Image (cartoon, rainbow, N blue to C red; front, top):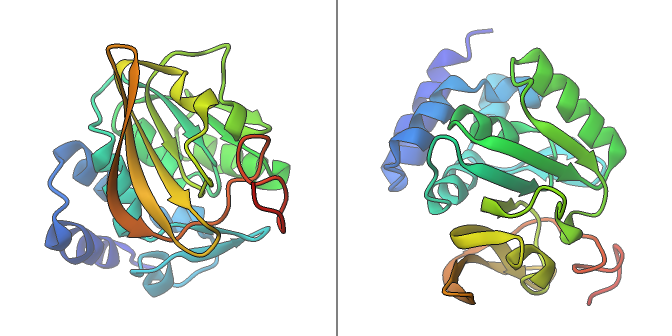
Length: 218
């Protein structure tokens, strides 16, 4: 199938048309084949303006949200970035395509291993993977220039904010199980500064410093 026309519409209408201007983000999302990460779906679904179910109770975020979070990271080539929630691997690929040195953690082994295989087949062999509790971060590789969390936490995990370099940035959705606010977290002069951005809806961040279990809130 010809996916190019659908990708072009995604870039022009869903991204540029809604204020995505960062050239690194736009270039990465024009290069990465989103349909590789939602196999078996039609072009209209793979590049549609909505999240797509990928199994195990998880989704791949709509293209605009991927682009928005990537832009809010203020990305730069060579950034050392931690991703919490590998999921399908699409956001991971975008981070790598922007020139990031990517470390990614997925709680669900089946998803993490599938994403690793897809990313390696797509030529992103430089990414470091881990299966485990993303709320604990990756202390052995800290500190990071950027952290992106692709699941909703009840609050900003201190374990993650403490793994930021000075003047670094973390983007994370925070709220209850039904609705969240995208938070922009920075570390300046040893202090953590948190700013609200936009409303959003993500699956829950399960872990010691997030949601305790699927039906419990912490």
